[in-house]
Image (tube, helix red, strand yellow):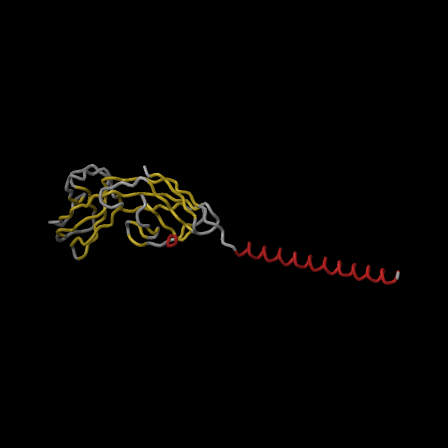
Length: 213
């Protein structure tokens, strides 16, 4: 009888040892799996909206009524104004075909019609360009995380309106990457003369909001 009890005890002890070894192996496998998941998981986007500003009375567009003739390289400003608008002439065959805007300016009166004129002496004549005024919204966003942010995957909402992709600002579609520590400047036309009171930016499921001054 005693030998049977001893045998049962041995078997029981063996089973406990096997069970302990199995549990240790399972725990090790679980730890390895968690470590692999954590290693492959992408970091959550971390960013800050530094500031947002309405720029009212800015030159948001222009119409070339007459490109003139015999023009050489030069710049244009708003006729008769001390404002900051400034643009380089784009010329083809002596005719002005476009502008590269350097500064959209601000505080021009919506009730006035503005024309653009060459800032200095030029060989051309008969240039006639009218300015379109509106409101631009500027935003500075800083990537505070450890991973890159693709502007194609980032969206901005203003006062509940349709989202704007951060690759598609006022100057057109320009996709880029915001690297860790980098501050990205984005601006867009709010539409007409309306100002924006609040914006929200969504990146990788993270949303942050800011008032617009």
